[in-house]
Length: 498
Image 1: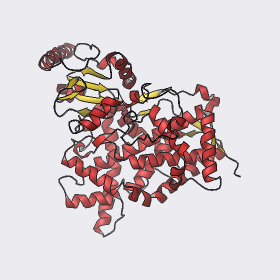
Image 2: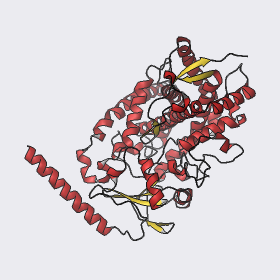
Image 3: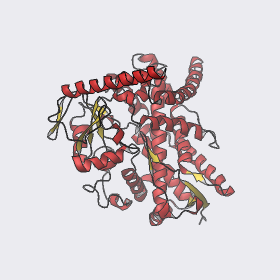
């Protein structure tokens, strides 16, 4: 048996070496950007390390803001400047409207129903149109403010209980539970997290497993012949998470269909999707709407909670900044009522804190990859058809060409500035830009502003375990999203109300 296995392994290695030799011989390389020399067969895969965004940023300092990496049989071009990001995401956005679908994404049931990963064709446009016109318009979001206020009220009530008992708060977990319920009540008219947040950890584990596995270099993506073998076990590892989440949505959709049969409706986004299923089965049906719902849940809950956690961590590391924000909240809101969404426009320092957090800690450090539809000239180089293209938003947000003291958390840099994260300022693209910018942006920043302002307004905070602010660990853990490696655990203290 061992001899057979060794022979099989040897045969696979020889096959891969021959495939790579043939692929490199056929691929024009004269006008491709430079890049680090890779190893035989695997290319640069083993050189990425546990934090690919940082490795790529360091390589860019040597090879330039546009460089070529080889991952097995796949050529990936990495852009690390605002100017190149603009060319890719705006000037040539049609060329880069498609995305390569990772094997980890294809492992879910009905991956063709996703919004983030399907080709940028008419089906994608139809799905995005429904989301942007029926869910993420300012008018629709304004009518649902009371729901978000209620969920943030639940968050504050939960923190008050922990405060009374002297228990610490896991900011990432409570922020995740809150955003998950905010999205759930908006889309499905139900809470998926119980009032005491006890079921939050299961959902957080399920979502993070998907995000973490999705960020791992996977041989199945770079050697298609190996997909069937799942050599790293990533597909096997992630399938239970997809299955469990689909079971939850199956039950909710099934109950809703029974209600609709009785002439009852909820007036939420699920109703819109089910109406679309009846109108246009080619783009919407009862099977493919579940991956779309899952996209909205994962993208919204994970990115918003991560940003809230990083913001609280930076505020705790900078007591002066925390005090400035608390003073603004007291001056503009007072101490006798809760923060409302309508207050946000009158809280410029709060907005600056969130913007600065997303500059240093973009939820998606590497924007989801694109695939070139044709050969295209970018700068003085050529990106060839089917090359994968990655924009390093993390690196651009820390580049001293665009930012003074880029590693310093300084919200004041955004005061009096009209720079925003809506995809027009390419030195600052935490949500991406162009036609495939995150569609949930209007809801995402509302949730982060409201949660962060409410937590800072109602409580004082200190780091659990007696850790001094300057010693707070700020290590990153890489996945599709970039979370804090060590969860932020803090002690809430009630403020004295004036």
